[in-house]
Image 1 (cartoon, rainbow, N blue to C red):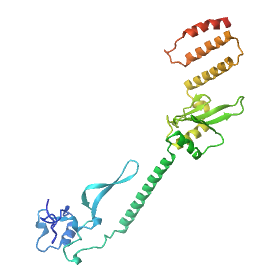
Image 2 (image 1 turned 120 degrees about the horizontal axis):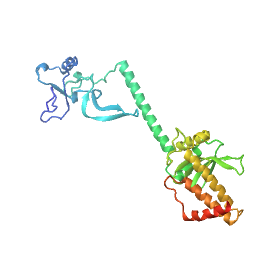
Image 3 (image 1 turned 90 degrees about the vertical axis):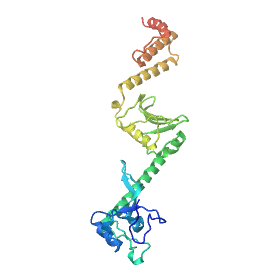
Image 4 (image 1 turned 180 degrees about the horizontal axis):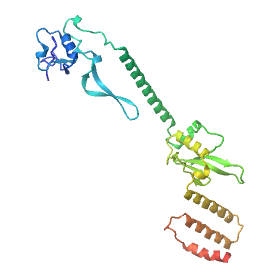
Length: 308
């Protein structure tokens, strides 16, 4: 392991303290180290591998941690496995020697080094403040339950475009067309009590480019973005062809159900409506899954009677 070559030092000797040792530098700093030791009894250059222990260096010269920046720009300081010396380190502390030999003054830094150190400290403090602020913002906007969502609705910056309606099962943001009779919702965003979120134009589910709609709402800011996107989207461009087909079929279903429930038609014509609805259901099935049911085959005959 070796021992300290400083006079009056017992570092790593029998009965002395166990300390970290540092080899003499091999560049111009070696002269400063030799001058600091002041040993007249031994020529340092004749020693095979002279070493000086950590007791003779100021704390400023000892590096116990290192800093690196991760992919997110965050500076992280971690401890080093072994203590190392700074580039400008030299022995100045001599505990068991006359006091005048030791230099207890703090290490003087060059103006440029001071400025860089100050800027690095300010940058580190700024990064820490941003991280704390970001964590606080995430915590403030996190949605963990339907009850929490309802309490956070006041954080949304909603225009007069939206009408908010809530039940125990969902909260709905509706845009009502008042120029139609009866009035109907043209655009809507629905969040269920399980925080599942979906957006619609009429009865068609929306898929807006560049605005991902998550399966489950976890952040109130995401809801704000979705509401703004649904409000300003160009309707014909955002609905997939299959969704448009489904919406049209559902509208026809609604009309047929309405006519069937108003007692406007005789029973044989109601059977014809059931036949039409079954045909529409087949359109909604995937290719290869189409299958005629026995009730449909019977209603087929009724349909032919009504329309010879």
